[in-house]
Image (cartoon, rainbow, N blue to C red; front, top):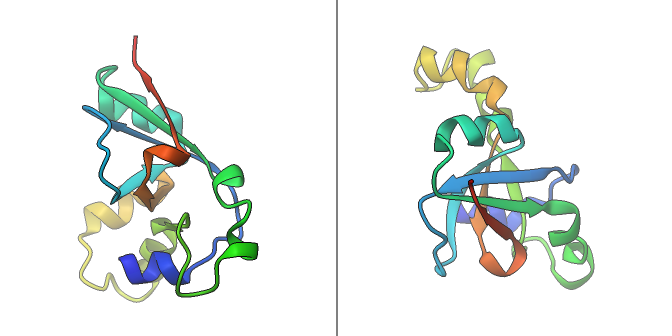
Length: 121
């Protein structure tokens, strides 16, 4: 997945959310969603809410980085699922193809320097 993120510059700039037990200082690839209600349901109101405004995080990606070296990009997994569904599934289960297309899922590097985090109350 890292090679996809380094080469793909998104055309949209949504606000993305993630829920986790704690914020790690390590930069790793994680799943995010564009729907706050999905994160709230998943977290059950516990842990940390991570918020990334991709408009801000991608602001200078075109100027300072080139394809193959992007740092702050994300990739919409829903595009992969839609293509897989049209192509007969491509190894994805029916449950994933039917239930997760509407979840507005993305993959992105979790980088606490470019994101905000809040505790659920």
